[in-house]
Image 1 (cartoon, rainbow, N blue to C red):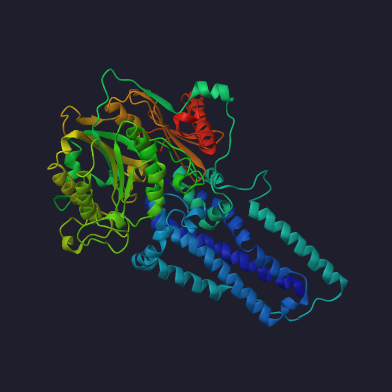
Image 2 (cartoon, rainbow, N blue to C red; image 1 turned 120 degrees about the vertical axis):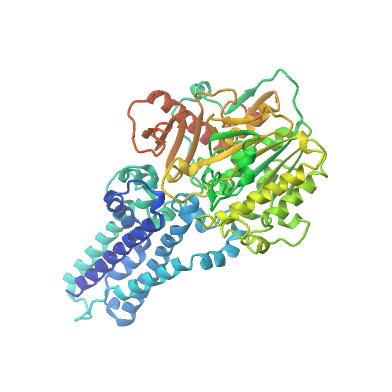
Length: 628
């Protein structure tokens, strides 16, 4: 029967694209194998389920047009149209997988719909596309080769007859068509299980949660977030009255002395993860200034970032709000919620506040969030005044922009609070021509720009020391996130991917010096700094009480899985159950799961934290004034 030939052709084509999805997975893994631990055949076999879901979703129209009853589909022009449509659809979605081969190194997860729409980066994306094509031309060539081979291998069957005849053929073709619609739904939802397959289900096919990106494919994660602006929903682990007794995101700061009205400057260093400090190449240190400065203040060695992207760091550092959504808080529908934080609290104490970011105004929505967070003024590329220093991609080189910041600080009335976010150690890692060859190249693309930014930081402090406000200022240094990558080891584990150095430096206090092993997150900086300033009163914060060294908690979220640190334990949580637990102090590579731990205590901590976060973000209750 001629109709069966159409069914066979469709089957062979779907089988072909399934093979190519696996090829994409293999290429993805080979380019990023340093980021994964103990990957086996399970990840690749498990990935087929997610591939089939993405394939049947993306090819639903093609499937219907290929086997719809009717003799028109046997015409040569229609068959050419089907082949071209099949190629275009699948070449387009395979491109997502190739984009993630490189972008995964920056985010640590498969991309979602928020990346495809460039939410928060609309002004940056068109400048960056040519740069990425230039820097990663080899990936473009591999992709081009793959889709050429794909086109050549698309099955085309020969039709000896050109018509379906009689009632029998019509019944068969109609039945197969209806059955195929059912298959689209079945495979698209990932099987017969009660709920459609989710990104979270990838955890079932891995020995280590950081390997979920191998199981998943990017078209699947895009589809799964296509209609979602966030992943938040009201949850009811505990009744509201009981929840209030278990956990509240409020910290009471008490002090016997008066508030110390020192200036506060927070320096957020682009990609300065812990993996980039204390390194030497050919006898030259990569970050000599920061290495030295870490010895002059309180260096928190056991510190972690909130996420993998710059846009995750700002709300965490400034307003003590963690990153527990699939998309960044700044890009979410809740970005305009009322918030407390450094700027609003310090303004109530008479501070002048300003946010400095050397990139184009509007980059990553930082200027909008600065306004929401209560800053008096935002300084971006448009406000920069000084010698020409445009890096041709992002904005103003770090050295010039930080020198500009020092000059502006000197015009501020004191006390002032300011944040400076650097940009030069962001891809494409451009440094000024005059410094080419001055800094160690290191063994990664980012290293030279890290060394340049360290030099810019030294110049910043060199100029700041000459100003009258310097001795009355405390400086907080934190990276926005690690740079990820490099050799296998701790910094490529699920936990090491978040590891950062944090420093609090007060040039007027020689006693504030040494190494501090207290578990610390970016959201802890608000209570930590305010406590150092002898602030008195309640503050809204999802961070930890600065006076407590035990029972500390850090949380983040990626690919449908919560990740928690509680004291010496690292664990993953799927929204219902704790999945894997490690004692990271004894097992830094997270190779040995443990089964003996205070399970009930941890579950109560985790669930109450998530429930409070979801409820307060959804209900716009992120300030003290919204009640407890």
